[in-house]
Image 1: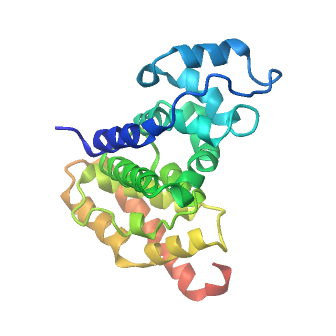
Image 2: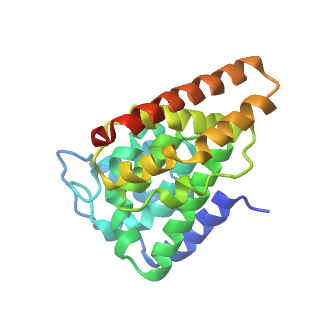
Length: 239
């Protein structure tokens, strides 16, 4: 039986199969080597590697092809993103500009397929430690695609095992150090951090874990969050 991410990726392949490879793609030959294009085109889609798709991720829609051209490669690109193989290509910086359009204004089945992938990717990320991707980077990518992050944050597993609790701790630490203030993203994050879910999950995991080191790790984040919430209560205008 396929996992959530695997099933979501298969749905992407089915939906985006309507975009055949455009052989005569336009590109800037100062930015893209002709051999890169030839190599990309002659390799079967499902066999493409991060080394082949990484340059396309950073250059597509600017100096290499357009959205329709990129759509042909999106299923494999997102498959590699979810596996962690695109981490070295700074996917949070580039991916939102590549999938944000189809996710917001594509055909209904395209928007649904990308949304289902994001949900499965988030679930995999929050339930696996260490996971292929950092939860803060996944959340940033979703936000920069123009999507609300509240359903993802408030959809955190109610009964979180140790891996989910440790991923939550990592996310909380990153969010508390975030510079993304005065934005819709931060307002949703602020509401979630101020609510009972993060501290409830961390407190339960501290008690449940059999590892003193993990208990200390989670306890430290709990205390950090508690201090932030005290600061938040007395300096609301700074948020």
